[in-house]
Image (cartoon, rainbow, N blue to C red; front, top):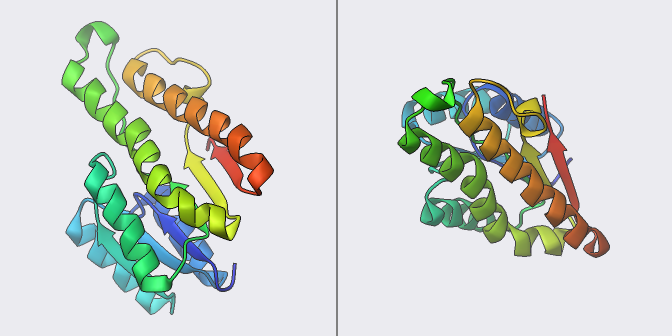
Length: 181
C-alpha cells in the first residue's frame, strides 16, 4: 500500500477508523470523511500520533456535492486516488409497521446513494490507477432481517450496485469488493 491514496468515507469510528489506521500503517496516504467535526479532529490527532500522512474532509456522503468535494480534495491533496472505501452508513431498528418513512429515506440516501455518489466521482481516478472500490455492507444485505427493513433494503441496493459495477469494471482492471463484517 506504500504510496497509494485511500479515501475512506465514514472514517471517524469503527471499521472506517480501523481501516484508516491499518492502511496508514501500511504506508498509504489516507483521507477520512465524516459529518462530525469533533470526531474528524480526534481521528486526525490519532493518525498524526501514528505518523500517518492523512487529510480529513467534513462531508455527508448523502449530499452529492459533499461527495464530489471529498474526491476533489483527495486528488488535490495527493494527486491521485487508488482505493475508495465506501464505509459511511447509518442503521435503524424498528418493525416496518412502526418505521418512520423519513428514516428509511435517510438510510437510502446515506447507505446507497452515498456509495453511488462517491463512487461516481472517484471512478475516473480509480480507472486511471486500476485501483479498487470497496463497499462495507452487512449480512443484512444478503438476507432481510426482521426489524431491519430499511437497513436491509439499503444494503441490498448497495450490494446490487457494486456487484453490477464489478462486472462492468473487471475488463478495465478495477477490483470491486463487497465486505460484510
